[in-house]
Length: 530
Image (cartoon, rainbow, N blue to C red):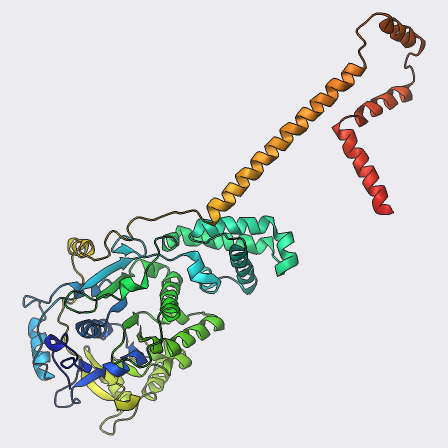
């Protein structure tokens, strides 16, 4: 059964059991839909640039929102902001949209807007979104910084020291201060944790500086994102669509991929098990998914595979959007049961091989060649395969994708600003909080150590002054007979001998601080010899 959007938000008896995707037409299949019961089995939206992936993502986000499922997605090209605004009959593609709706039998088609929350790591096009260094963890942070195994090991030691000594790592300056302390105490730490090379510490500090120059420092700090704020519904029961502004973020692709992977990991860690719900609790769209796997270490790929496999039991569906299914590792690709494949262009031998490989992953339809269909479908068309009852892969079908109900394309900056101010989380994340953490604690320790060193130096100087005054007092008798005797003795024992004069100078020097140090050195050497 495939209901129109206006029936999506009702009581449990009226609620549709699938999201309408498209279909219809003489040479096309019956209406195609994504069964909500299997929407948390993850999915794939693939296709060459300009074939309609973004519109497909938009209509899926509309469908999930309408039946009360919150959505989180990244907006790489600023095209998805139109979800916050209703489509219009004045739009140049209005006639084409209405014709497509009639062709596929979408009688309930109409224009409407959806509840949207804008987010931005840089705080420019939406609410600032932050996490702490401690929550990110050494594995993902090492991936973000591009560290070697040895450098990652030192970073793990720094995190261990943070835990053991009660030094919270909240922002970048906390980590930088802790690494400085680790470098200064490398010899002692090496005896306990293994080799801590100061060169590795320096390399990590340089990478942190690069990250800071790229604006990555704004990702770390407080208040940190609360997952509940991306899992909200509005007053009508529709799921809020959280849109992450990623156009500027794409200039740092590793930062982009690592942040989204962190968010998935946090969902996996914090959400309780729900088994197989009637509909997902949250749907997560990962655009430009190939950035997650490019040059990724095996440990990271394994973590992605683990999260994708287990997070569905938390009621979270993950949908990867990429140009070619070959961009996704096979172990992850095998878990993506719901697939919408837009056109692939086979201009080279490698492209042709990728096309054949993509076609082989679908359940064949005797009416047409899957490989030919993937090559031939036009803009706004796709080859689809959705999970059917009992989770079995559906037969591959050629499908006309339904038109979106919200505005196609971006919205004006003033309209975006109005949506941000009307958000239920407005004012919660706008002002950063810098509470006492590792940086402040280590700075306080350093200041106290400096004061103690100053006091010790002053005490030593005072002691030397007292000793000098005492030595001078022993050589002065107030005048009189003693003075006469000294003069007489002095006349009798004039230090003509160079050796005698040098001996007196040495004895005098040994009475001072330098002399005590020399004696300690000599005696220390003797005792060590024994």
